[in-house]
Image (tube, rainbow, N blue to C red; front, side, top):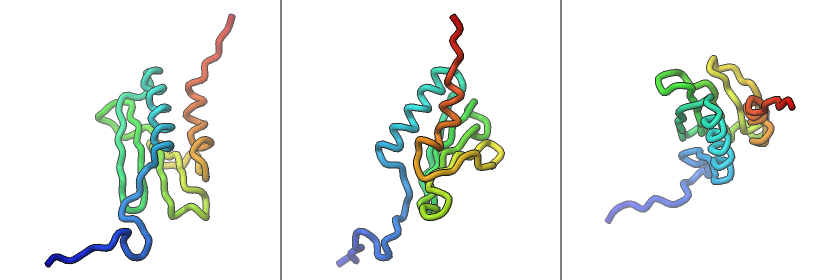
Length: 114
């Protein structure tokens, strides 16, 4: 007979970090609005052992303009979410996704003059 692997794995640490449905919906909604504004054209999602990363690109053949990272290890420190620019500098960090996405959403606001 074969060996039986218990689920969940012993130790309690997941083998892969991911986005839940509400988080991914919020991120993809923002991505859709940025595409409609002509600022982004492509995206990539990387799910790893330490982090889940959503990367947004201006063009498909470039480095990502922004990365939205989810790192559960930092839950008790600076916050689980980070917004990282294309040079690798952390622009915003926090415990909730909304305030971390605020700098990107501000770019979508336009001044309307009558």
